[in-house]
Image: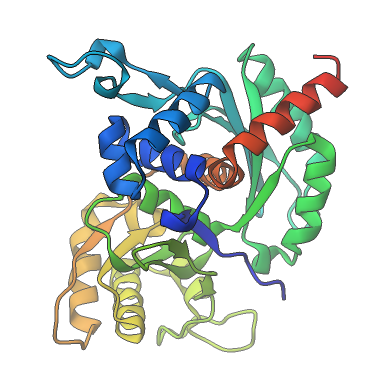
Length: 355
């Protein structure tokens, strides 16, 4: 079966200067040049030049209305991501539904559409590309810089690199792929960002069951390839298509809400014991779809974790729009890796097409 790619969510001080500056500003929301210099280990002069270049490209914008009192000139003026020029295209392929979305460079979803697709069929990326073009037509003047393609690759039996090449040929954009669970974890990580050093475990349960971890090494943070929990044993008597009984994916749909909460909490506790993370985030509508059962999930988790030190447990902040958010998050990868290159490539593509 195909292996899902690792997703880099924080590139650190060893990345190119433009990437460091853009990533820090995206993470902080807004920052002054001295703050960027301190965080990235760069000189203020270097940051000043880089910020000016990124602003000229339309990736950053200055906020003179928020300048520090008593300071004159650019050092006192903060910069932020310019959300008005560029977009990313996010494509999420599920078993029955595909989602196409446009996101700005902060990761915020601007527009999205869903397309039903036949169960078991290969994704029609040509159709999805047309949907993406139609969405772009609703936001005139926006220039696409990159695309993200997310799917539960193992479950649908597809090779990410093959689909990446196909989508790149269809869109003319740099394309980054990600496993569904890893992409959701990356989205969660990027929207929290504070107090998340070390290892964060994300346990996902919806149509797909699995886990992924974000490992913050100080200089770089990666979200690992996802691991499947489809056939994790639950002790139930419910038969699974694999020939055994009690597999998680087969059991959850047939359980009562209370039993489902206890089962999912127990599985999360067991995975926590295997990995010993610094915190646990529970993601997916099987966890969050019934708010009345959240306490039962946590209670069962506590009962089934054997490690003697407690770690924080929380639930996802995202709802049904997570497919669009995760695909747009993955699409930010090429932009954050090489901002100048993406802008240059977008300009060349538009010139070839006569835009």
